Length: 501
Ligand code: FAD
Image (cartoon, rainbow, N blue to C red; front, side, top):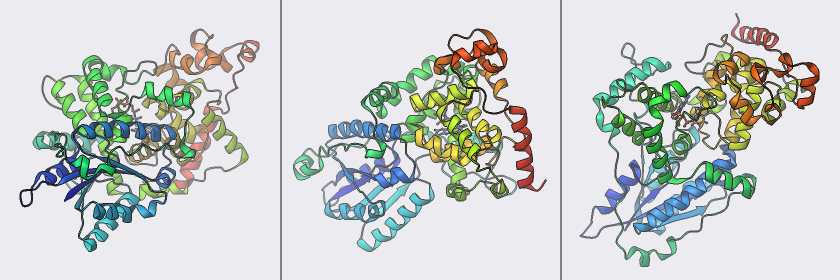
């Protein structure tokens, strides 16, 4: 008899809801015999394509799988890994493997995107017919989706601030949601003999379209160490060294004042519960909303991740390339060759606006971008370059190591003013003001835009306007590809037309 845990976006042993339940089930003996816990991971190249998973993220997953396999091995639990070329075959393959292994229980943590929910519902149905119980559990969020609603109307929240107040109250009155569960218990050592073929599955290489050069792979491995041990190390360091200053430093582009934990949340090498519980415990008040300003602010940022996942569950149409607010689907984004040239300038970091180019080059070089920079480049793409925000959303997914559908879609919806609880569409970021405010000395710009390293003083924010023309020409840096004031006026007209104003 065996019990299966199917790893998906939850690549950790500690505080893994479904894994813990699978382990408990395996420990529940039938006729005096415990079951064996078998872990599996199915790699689907078609899923990587469909989800626009970046090569950096694929690489992080493969590196984390290796660590997961080593950790499971110490517990005599095999991690069976298989590549399933066609994603539609996954449903049957899960059940086939369970049957082969004599398992009548398969556990997994829920994924909330529409395709994934459909897949799981199908497996549950097919499993019933084959006598296999496929059990899917809430694990991704601190507070499970559907749990919070407005007091007055009982509806789901679409505005963050009241949602966050309710979220905090809920966590304080249900402290069990922050209880973290232990890793699975070890299998009996004879498991190695009985299931010898399931141990030591080779970790496959990335599909061709997602592969990296060896230099890229080495850089990523040192910038973003994979696996749950690295996640805990980073969390511990952040809590002891930086969180106290988080509310002051988090918007300064040149400071690494943020935790850099998103890659771990996005790949499940750290749970949001573990992070929030650790931050709360580091707070002298042991509360989420009183005490250290740095801790309170950081918890409220981690909560944004929960918020966007709740939004995805409540309004699944955001998964279907539609804006949260249907009226905004009517915006007529220009599709001229000029629009294409502007998109090209944005995605390659050659717009001639230093702060934008620095941010895009940070993304292209590191597969990550500072949150403030994400907000600035997202606003710039749709409101200055007048390019459909969905192209930016897609580009981010294709390049971010922490690509996460709900947070990315939420961030783009916020920045373009078309999403849930958005920045009002008529409030348009001025890239120059953002640059002067969040990178006053131009340290971030100089880090990423080589051509501008020699510039002194305030000219760094707008070299074309502020330098002598001959001096500018020597830089080999492009002129601004757009005038902010003109673009702002056209953008206002486009949005107003779509909204019938
Ligand atoms: P910290 O400041 O240390 O925050 C801690 C954690 O809180 C983060 O790791 C993240 O999980 C969560 N968080 C913080 N801010 C947000 C936010 N605005 N929305 C949701 N969660 C948040 N985040 C992703 O994880 N994946 C994405 O694909 C993604 N795309 C984005 C696209 C746009 C246009 C914008 C504006 C934001 C996006 N974000 C995304 C949110 C945010 O930029 C990153 O989570 C953050 O930069 C990660 O760095 P950190 O871990 O150092 O964050």
